[in-house]
Image (cartoon, rainbow, N blue to C red):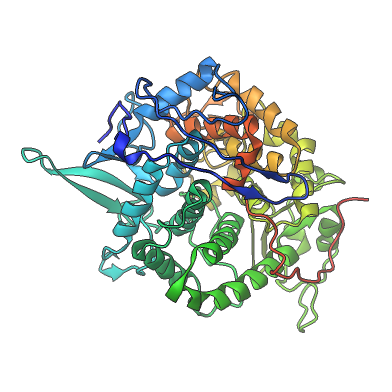
Length: 529
């Protein structure tokens, strides 16, 4: 149910005090106390953040692009039994709904951050509560029962009896998804969002509720279960995350591993009582996961040269080429793409296979979670600056690089007509990813990078009606199957704007380095002279 008016009941909107601490070598700022005043006359609830501006808005004049974005976000709100509960994926009336009329876990994250930064936490709280309840439902796909900890990929409001105005939530745990893949990332995003809400409100009462604590414990039980793996990374099927179609990310994709690291660190902050039984497991897993990703996923010029010279068929505990990667399998494009200064976490590592593609989300979450060291974080941004035309082009931001084409596209995607070269997940440009670029540039004290990308996006995004993605090597064309008024494109833009306007908000989405998690001793290359 989509309602064009966003009117949170005044009785449920409490005055909040914010005291968010963010500790970083580049940005040590403390959010001052803010008083939020509700303005009922506005179409979208306006939270006036008073911060040394004499009680007046510090940025009273919004651009036309911002006005259009807030209006689009307002129209996307879904209500359940009179309460705002999320935002639909898109409100493009020119195409069939398919499943774009549902509230997706991953899609709602940018919307939730926009509402939090605007001073509207209630919709985020409602979303977290209801999805925790959905998790408790029995989940089966073709007579097979899924783990209790699986969170839904999406849900929608269903009117079971229109005459009585009875509403229920219908959830999809993968049984209706294209490819029938359960969403591995949903639980990871849920814990991240619970921590963001707690960080913004400076109130652990929601996180401390039995429902939220139980939801976290079920997710952790699923993630930390023992099996046959010799790797601390999570084993995943193709299509289990933002890239939800066959794109060769099966195995141990960096997006999932970085989100896993982030969610584990958030869980350490949020767990209490019986959840403390997981703390020692989490600490061991964090240490092992960090070592694994630093040792085998990090790539820079020197590391690439080392892999190029690998010997094969090594059989010993001291083998350098532990995954028996054949040097001849290194793609030609990487030798020109890799700059002398810079680096990144590659897409995937498994036996005899290294996926050298750049994946945006995984690398930026690695920075925000402090999985990346300070040096690695700077190297990732150096790569973005050095390869601006390839990764940013004319519309931020490449979801992955480069695109697959010809026979590789046929084999890896199964001739997927939606993932043709430089389109959709196969090298398409996704506006939603802008908020991540801005967040990491703010965290590292290099906001000009995010600002340059934002100014580039503002030239077209609103005029093009906030499409889902853009096509082409430089992202010049609106995607051939892209939905207009894609909600997370709208929300990602707004979050990026608010982070640049008020960098202290970075503490909502970023974790500082944890001194208690000891850094492994690694022998690896140095990206900086």
